[in-house]
Image 1 (cartoon, helix red, strand yellow):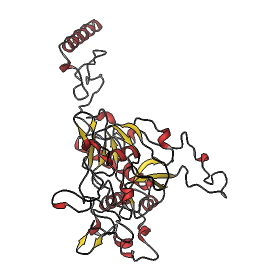
Image 2 (cartoon, rainbow, N blue to C red):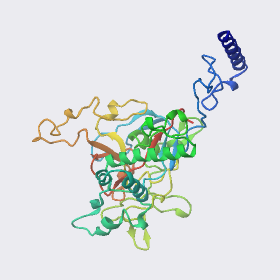
Image 3 (cartoon, rainbow, N blue to C red):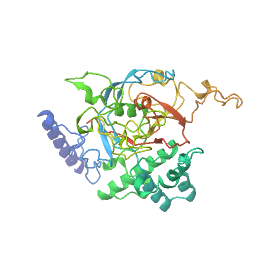
Length: 402
């Protein structure tokens, strides 16, 4: 008897759902409004024994993240290939929408990381994520104050962290994901199950995808910011050499007319100009919010510091890439055995290309203007660090482009 009542009740509910659905698309279920019944079984959500569907209001806003609307673009270097490397030839790709840090990760952010690591991690791990402050040291230059002060002195709090390797930047991204999501879960009143190993279930709808380093394609796409060069529908008026319009490195408008748009090295021995009228105003790194943001609202996508990206370096990646969300994770289609890097014979090292080198982009305070173009690329070992390389994080846009 009970089974019959059960069948009749759900038959009525299913019929009601069908009638509502037939009345118009406005009543169709969505991620934010899935309804009370399954559209395929008619069973009730969130009943005592039913499938539990958590409330969802959209992907939460992550600290410091800016939304980057994806789309079709032409990646590659439009500058003269002065090194004749031919390693970033133009190709058309589509990049999905994602998020990227508004600014470079700063010293204060890394000191916060070290603070929490010191509280609950081993001494060895703490030592492994400390920046290498000796990257400032030079035998024939008096950079000693930066060695001692750059990371920890309060005046440098909002200058980009440097002396961090690709591996360390990746560790920071993992830690940041955990800390941000714990805070979001706490604010939503969600307890983390012990059996989950500390991971907050994605089904809750209150947590964010992981922070990570941007792919090279994402970084280049976001830096160029061609969203600001469109006219009418999908008519792109021009390609950009830098993250701003025009061929000039100076601001052509308003009160800031004539001032440089990035922190870079103007020429041999010229890091900041002449006293009384300094050109970019910074001899080394600068405040992470200095210089006008690009059309996506991102600061210092050219100059200040180079930035690590996710990709393993290969000179011919442009030939192998997928044309949707391209990234090179490893040596697929182009293994390190193709290069004379000493892997087979340590006595014959004629190439630096192997599975431990990563791409960095953007130019720095110590680079000439050529490297400010988003299409240029360089590489270095993933466990190396310098005084000219920092990073910012990125994150996928889950569940749609808007």
